[in-house]
Image 1 (cartoon, rainbow, N blue to C red):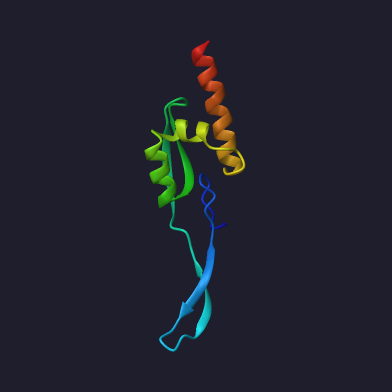
Image 2 (image 1 turned 30 degrees about the vertical axis):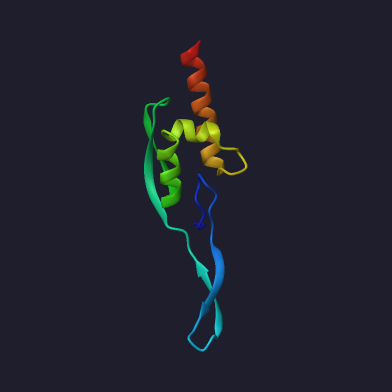
Length: 97
């Protein structure tokens, strides 16, 4: 599995370990990915995602999964998140009609 957040697109970053003698060796900074299920009000069900801790805070800050996905561009989301976004959009359209 890739080390990438499905909602925010955060991925592995690279940098250096720097010793006291200023020797530099390359290292990786891995994102804090958690497997979690998020509740969708429009679909009335839990949806499982692999999300970073930052991604969970973004979802909560925006008022839930439905509003976060509607505000986020498709390029930033994973393919499964885009599918869920489309399902939410159609469910909201049916509820409004």
